[in-house]
Length: 587
Image: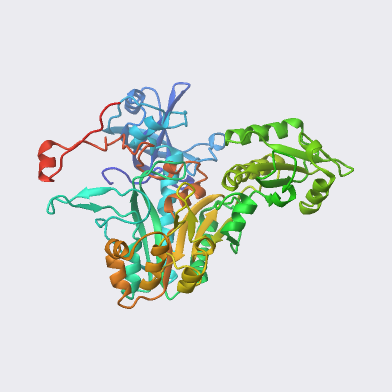
């Protein structure tokens, strides 16, 4: 028999009754019922129940061991009997009568419970992440991640893509976030940068003639944490294709996402094909370029209705309305709670009216609306008895942010929200440029290396704020999974695009010398995208926080509490790297 096990803890069935076996694993739980000791033994594959009876050496050994001790046991498989079968366990029809116990790894007192979700705080969990990963939910999430990545590799290869590796040590990147930098011992005073994304290298692979590339790429960005963003490092499915237009990129990625979410989505429906929603339409209808399409409500721009109005709350402002049908049975608390929700987002309140059976409007602002306002609102919003309308007024961006969130919240509270479904969409036609509100300067709004729609002619003849880029995002259930673009591969267009954003030719030639040099030696039209692996798994696992799907994430302050990183360097090491440290002065 094998030194440690003849079977795993998830393997034995009723057909094995009478067999002598050897198992190894962790003592997951212990119960003393009428003097008989029942132990749940756990390994990667599952749980098997052990039985030890009083007066036996195995009872004495198991009774004294702490939870999470690693043991090897020998014993015989016996039937539980019909009344004791556990239908929730694959091994629930059998148990092991233990004859011998060997301790393989003793366990110290535990800082928190492993066999139950006991509400321990995240910092403690990250400090003892190796214990946290033993929990069933965390173990399931990490194995889901493993399966998803394996499936991605298989599906991408089947779609004709070739997996390639790109450098980790490189030059600083224009991605927009802060780089993590690495000092060069052999080049004093100079630094490498860890890649924010393999953007330039994957484009260079297209220029080198490889046509279809993918990589499960580690990316590094020195940015703050959010629920859907882990600080420090993350992984993305990096993709690039040659001789493609926008729809050519969409087709394989849409097929991949549909198959992935159908395979691992636990029966949740995937809506396909994915709608294409222009950026400006998304901002108007949903208040966000990451719309959650499970919410079956839309915003309507009604600014023109109140132009010249004497109603000061709306006059001279951008006004957006949210019509909500079928709220006749909702109590006043429904309206008050939505107003309170809007206040948490920065609103001063939330104006609203409701439609009575005779078509008249009632509510806090009804008295301020003229007959013309009411007629136009009724027509524009298709109002009917039982409807309510919520209003937001102010600057465009502010109203979009607040009313976009109110849209989703109202849908959930009023029963217009679709559960157990993955609603994907493509957001397209992003503006190429935006104006800085403080300086008035024109700058890139999304991705400076995208091809402008209309090419060089558009750059030379159109108002920069009217120029759209061949840029796109893929969004699922209100989560942005990725940004992508058809790349600008022509040096003249690239130089002109940067000139509009205030960069002179010399600066562009210096900062992006490698890419421009490559473009001048025959670059194919190309484009790509990079869906975030962590976010994909977060959605599939139905987890609200991305750190729940990563084996060893940093905390919100970009610290590894388990390994103690980041650390200080000894003076000798600093000297070898030609570095000195200047710490911030205490305030």
